[in-house]
Image 1 (cartoon, rainbow, N blue to C red):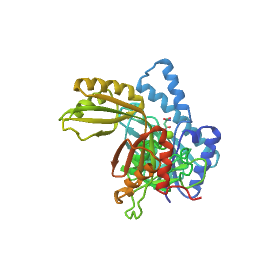
Image 2: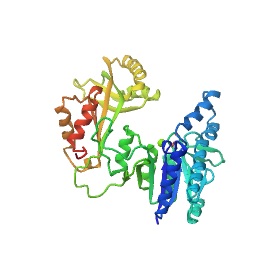
Image 3: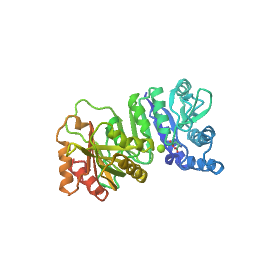
Image 4: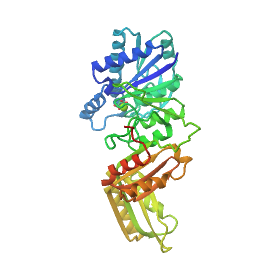
Amino acid sequence: MSLIVQKYGGTSVGSIERIQTVAVKVKQSRDRGHRVVVVVSAMSGETDRLLDLARAIQPRPSPRELDVLLSTGEQVTIALLTMALEAAGCPARSYTGAQVQVRTDSAHNKARIRDIDGGRVMGDLESGRVVVVAGFQGIDEHGNITTLGRGGSDTSAVAMAAALKADECQIYTDVDGVYTTDPRIEPRARRLPRITFEEMLEMASLGSKILQIRAVEFAGKYRVPLRVLSSFKRGEGTLITFEEDDVEEAKIAGIAFAKDEAKLTILGVPDQPGVAHKILGPISDANIEVDMIIQNIAADAKTTDFTFTVHRNDYGKALEILKDTARALSAREVQGDEHIVKLSLVGVGMRSHAGIASRMFEALAREGINIRMISTSEIKISVVIDEKYLELGVRALHDAFGMAQNG
Ligand code: ASP
Ligand code: MG
């Protein structure tokens, strides 16, 4: 008999009807002989509604009191789902984070889970009950209610699965799995039956937002098999798991992209120690996150050019800062472009197979797409291209690596 943790997000429990549908699904899993722990989010829109209430009193409400308020959203759902389960003839019991001792640090609104005492939950499971636990919340060492940050119920579920040594953590959401790329851009995108944790982290951080990144990291660290699947459709979803040893083919998981990028270049800066720091120091002091960085080889042995990318929202500020730096360094010129995007090819197969980069560049060249920047890691190749080529680029790569659905 296996132990499964199932997590249902806000849309999956967005109405009484949907909560009843979830109850039926949970009951089915239990009837099949599984021991089931359910972790739930607040009903969709509820956390935002509570936030608005708080902000109507104070633009920056006290973080401690905000946690007391926000944690009520999940408390509503655990009670309603447990009632629905019992009404469907399935014995169940609900618990808040504090009741099952989801212990966190004291960083209100963005707390991190330290440990969970699974004893009480195990007791209920042994008595044949389904256990329904509030996601997103915990308790610190002083007994204060804490919350884990937006989307935190995913992490609650994974942490619960790790603490109970569950056989699988299933995340039920409104998509039926992880796709090779965004189906809105490439309609022939295919659901991946499996993907590795590493690949998932690249896909998620690059814009395929399905799961809270922290939950994926947590699952990788504690070796919790994680499955993403739809609350509304049948299917196996996508299993996020470990790399198989025998990667025979050049496996590419998918294509991720980041739309909101901008790039900045400072031309003719002195080619000497400390310059990269002088350029990027003020940028990071302004809390602007830098993604790709390229420094050219000095053409004349005296000066060089330096390019980096930032989020488009930070473009104006970064440009201003860079102009000041240019004056201080007597650089020749500053250039910027806020109409760029980043495409990334992701796959563990890159580790063992040469020629993937050249196949990628060839596919882009065939479409006449100019590559502005390139960066690589063990399992990823990213290129910066003009915004207008985003769709063409994604489709060209999807084709070139044979990712399309058959038929
Ligand atoms: N209810 C919280 C939120 O909306 C946590 C979650 O849904 O995962 O962010
Ligand atoms: Mg969510």
